[in-house]
Image (cartoon, rainbow, N blue to C red; front, side):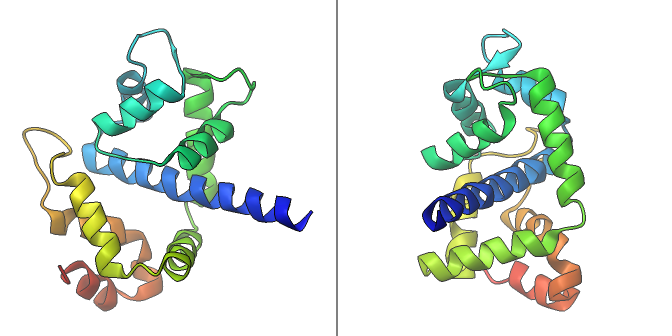
Length: 173
């Protein structure tokens, strides 16, 4: 029982962080969920499977491990069919956004848990973020600098960390 609860919590944690990254990309890119769905749904069938999801995420510069992709698919696949249609995708992403809108503390807590578990430092995490975004810009006409990406990713944490701490972290590259 305890092991099942731990695994379920890890899956939920992966989903929270992954959806937060997707939402951050949406904000940076100025695109909406319909635009993102169209980018993921490579074959235009109106649904995507895990393979299309992985490709779509890579195309926008987001990489997720297999366990995270499976957690996301499980979260979004309401009918258990193995594919996510437009309605499922938008409904689940909107629901998640509403649930997490006032919860930057939860995301920060998950980042801290990750750091404790992995031994990663803030610098290592940002370096990995920079590496994942260095060849991808939000739009071809308006590329973002690494510092802007970092500032945007820290923006939700400003009320918790304090603006001065968030700004200092954003400049520590």
